[in-house]
Amino acid sequence: PRTARDWSVDVAGFSLAAALGALILTITPHDFASPMTAGQVVTDTAFGALCCLSLWWRRRWPFGVALACVLLGAFSTSGTIAGLLAMASLAVHRPVRPALLVAGLYVPSAVVCSIWLQRPVTWSMLLLTVALAAAATGWGMFVRARRQLVSTLRERAQRAEADQLVRAEGARLAER
Image 1 (cartoon, one colour):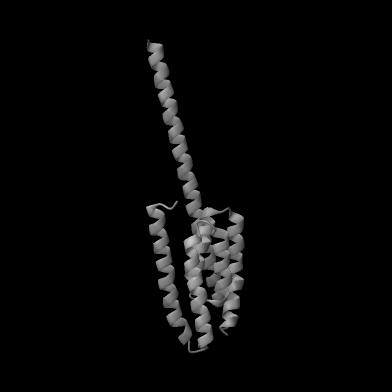
Image 2 (cartoon, rainbow, N blue to C red):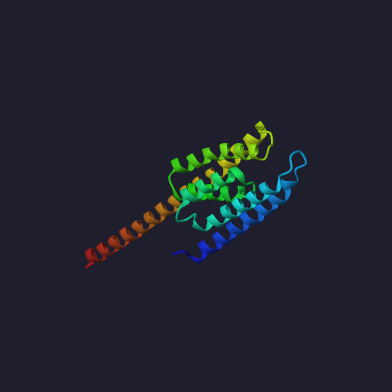
């Protein structure tokens, strides 16, 4: 079951992805070099909305949601933020390999999106895409490692407290 904190984080993530996706969608179609067609705008909007909605299930199925967001992101600029959040969540909740696999698929997905939008694939676009994927995955791995460290420290503190109680009881018995 989700806690109140989980709900607030999920609402914030969904709201952020939807708002920034809408902002990206208002800027992208009017690119004067190659404006988007009406069909591309509708497809982008639909796939971006699916990416944002899928964030509600990112805790239960992080790999599936991240993979779906990356694949839908090949035809959606508005789903970019949702895809990055899904990748970070995958890195938090699953081992390194699936997170790196999805992060590796993020770059070809961006290339397909550029080709679909009839935009040139430049080195700067590729570097930005790699940097975003690495940042999202790295942040998720950092959060996972921090949670594991905190959990380990809590366990050690509980064991130390239990050992202290045993020693105190032993001292009381020896005193008697």
